[in-house]
Amino acid sequence: MKIAILPGDGIGPEIMNQAVKVMNALGEKFETETVPVGGAAYAEQGHPLPESTLKVAKEADAILFGAVGDFKYDTLERSLRPEQAILGLRKHLGLFANFRPAILYPELAGASSLKPEIVSGLDIMIVRELTGDIYFGQPRGMREAPDGPFKGSREGFDTMRYSEPEIRRIAHVAFQAAQKRSKRLTSVDKANVLETFQFWRDVVTDVHKEYKDVKLDHMYVDNAAMQLVRAPKEFDVVVTGNMFGDILSDAAAMLTGSIGMLPSASLDANNKGLYEPSHGSAPDIAGKDIANPLAQILSLAMMLRYSLAKTEQADRIEAAVKSVLKQGLRTVDIYEAGTTKVSTTQMGDAVVKALA
Ligand SMILES: NC(=O)C1=CN([C@@H]2O[C@H](COP(=O)(O)OP(=O)(O)OC[C@H]3O[C@@H](n4cnc5c(N)ncnc54)[C@H](O)[C@@H]3O)[C@@H](O)[C@H]2O)C=CC1
Ligand SMILES: CC(C)CC(=O)C(=O)O
Ligand SMILES: [Mg+2]
View 1 (cartoon, rainbow, N blue to C red):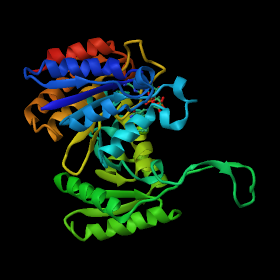
View 2 (tube, rainbow, N blue to C red; view 1 turned 90 degrees about the vertical axis):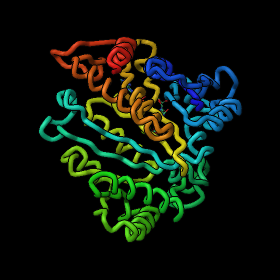
View 3 (cartoon, rainbow, N blue to C red; view 1 turned 45 degrees about the horizontal axis):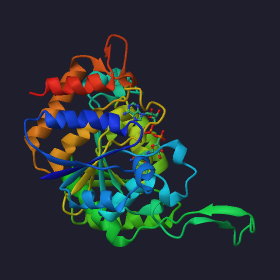
């Protein structure tokens, strides 16, 4: 079984080192290959997703990804920017189903941005469509406005679109996820304004006919953002498009104490997956050994569970994470008075030590 390791940029390599340390401590031999991606690959090979990196990712059984991006690359032409690497991997590998579990560990109730009584026990699953929507729609670009009141002035434009098969397949994934949990699914859209999302709502409603045991409701995205901070436990499984899911999952992350706690799995139709923290490369804290490595380590656990069928190893890692939190160890993003502040490396070491 081969695992492709793509650390990327910013805090990516720092948190990946911790996840690899944990993987090596499981007492099992994993074949791994580490390759550059994002800004690191651009600096080395002139492209954020070189053919050689894509090949390793394609041939692996699973991919463990760090994060990409650095503000110093923001002026490059778009096709060369680090973020194109993760977008390209998702598209090339058909990773359309993104699972982002937002779980509040009881020990972090005080680190959440919401009052403990509103968030304690939080356990929601955001299912985000990952290869369509306005992030990939064509045409897009910058041009002289061809019409309208600002005709002739410069404008930027993108295209939001979803085809029926794209909506159907993510809806099936979400209904099936709901069947394994509390049989409640909220589909988040903007059907009151956007044709794309009226269509989304119609198709999700149609797929629902095949899942009568699941209670489906629909919610507009602005209300969903509000409900997420008002009464997040009202949600169980949430399904939504690429952009809304991107935004709502960052908001959900703060309910768990930090975005450094939110892992993710991006799966294709055969459960081959890419596993990455939900956050970015955090250039503001890179190189300081202070980033929270737990989202990366929990992404490793998701990889073992979803793609490699190693449930026991995944359970061990998740138990070790719970144990270090119980011991009161905290990176700075989840620190509160009365707990012990640790570095990225110390947190990784503590998880290794806590492995049963
Ligand atoms: N999948 C990916 O590789 C993603 C890449 N990005 C890229 O990352 C770069 C930075 O983007 P931002 O908008 O700043 O988002 P970000 O998620 O990197 O950081 C947002 C805030 O959260 C903090 N943060 C993030 N991860 C953390 C961790 N593990 N521990 C402690 N604090 C953490 C950062 O310090 C920052 O204050 C950009 O180039 C962006 O395009 C953004 C999101 C996803
Ligand atoms: C950097 C983007 C391509 C993606 C993003 O923000 C995400 O997947 O959460
Ligand atoms: Mg994001």
